Picture 1 (cartoon, helix red, strand yellow):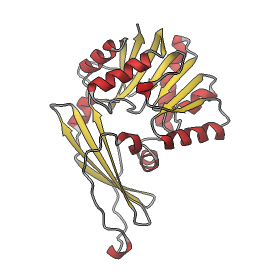
Picture 2: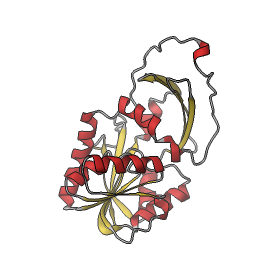
Picture 3: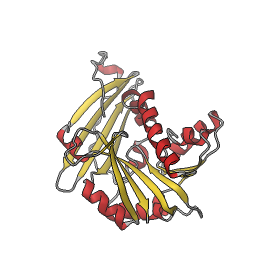
Picture 4: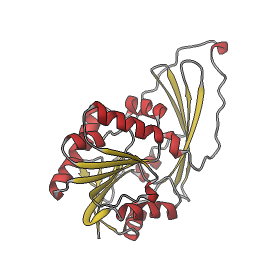
Length: 274
């Protein structure tokens, strides 16, 4: 994540609650990590119109190439991709494990007068009674469970993708993240102060992330998530084990990945359901 570090405005100690930094591991922390505080940070650091347009151009190009009409958006968040694709005429269903994100996505659908279904569910337990031409895992919507549970998630999604359909799985580039690993950083966004703290276990291929947010009124909130950082070889193995076959790997939604590429921040795995 690229952020601009700023010098905070000094405040008197009596004006704010003294922060309690919570570095506990919360197994289900991902369920609430990616909500309002996170979206404020995301809007500030990595959600420019240019970035979103690049993602949508990439998706639209593939959808047109495959003549795909139906989309399952797994971990749809606020509807960043769901709403534009719905407005473009695609039959799209979004699912998210966060009640708050479902509320935000439903609001976005109504606000833009789009037609899309948004469901609150754990994608490991999907039972929609239909299949789709394409499943999406955008903006690191995959990797928050054990390997066995991540496999179960992909298998659940595979059951909802028609044979010959596709999945696009957008993940951080593991090697690039490791090479530029930053243990701690902070930023101020609209009077909210964010402290991001990370630990990296290279042997297990896991990154733990803690987020502490100081709000203007002095309230302090703590969040946690654990992300499994798969190598490209591991991604191929888990996708194949779930019934997908990789057709291409792309860097930052634009360039086919080369074996020596460590410059792309994100990788997009494009796989066909077999």
